[in-house]
Image 1 (tube, rainbow, N blue to C red):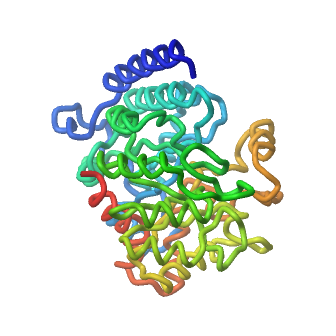
Image 2: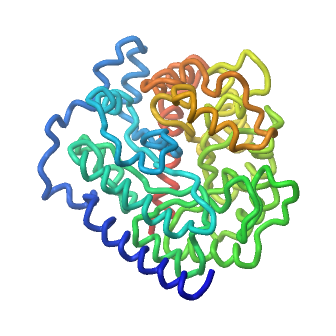
Length: 389
């Protein structure tokens, strides 16, 4: 990047920063804001097909989906698209209290793209502030639920926008609260899960980890390669997260995590979110919701129930609901090692009420109410309370 380009980038970032600051209503301002028009409409009254026990658990729990785009749409301006009343109703009926709205953005213009992305989605939240709010601190998650709001965590699945250590604090000021160290490929930070060689974290990557912990930004290693994953866990002073991955012991896929990584993550107090993406759940059919619960079981038995949560890696409707042209573009953008099959979603976890489906599946598996609540969000709430200083 030339000096002139760097100056231009900084100017564009500052413009986006101003937009982000003015467009989104921070959660701590709720007390002074106009109350939601229908504060009770995000209760679970439209989910009578699920067991009374499941409905009661979801109603009580702070349900956190730690990888949940607000809208799966590959268009760059997806945040500018209108939101239908049905879509709003589906958000209210979903039972999900917190969405981690995280996207994979990288490349030579990553700083500008991420700044524009954050500002755009903050604007989306502001336009629908009767239901959604952007969070800043962990206590905001609790206040959002009490106020009948859906909380949104701003995230990015790559840190190529950190062109210097100073950018970590800069983007934290833009509202970024969680960032994944790498996507699937090699960057100046470290190696992604489908890169042919994994050299681990670079010296610069080590400094970025330190800066993220310093400002209180959650470190995510979901897409990192094996050595980069272990380096990040070892070098971090405190707990970090695998927001959306599964267990390689159950499915030999490069995007999944080894038992060694899961043990070391848990030893530092971290939490792993289990995803419902079909090829990450199982390499063979039938792949069912129970197959997804097998991964929750594996983490719970390996390191304890307090270290497992949910990171569905999909919006309310799933990947298979994408328009055919977008679905083809998505599939074509990944290496063959991803192992796409005819369907990407799992039956039952491909609908707005998927959390209820999962809760009933956990109940059938014999989990106590307290353990289910921990998996649905309690564990990630604890982690965020530790990290978001």
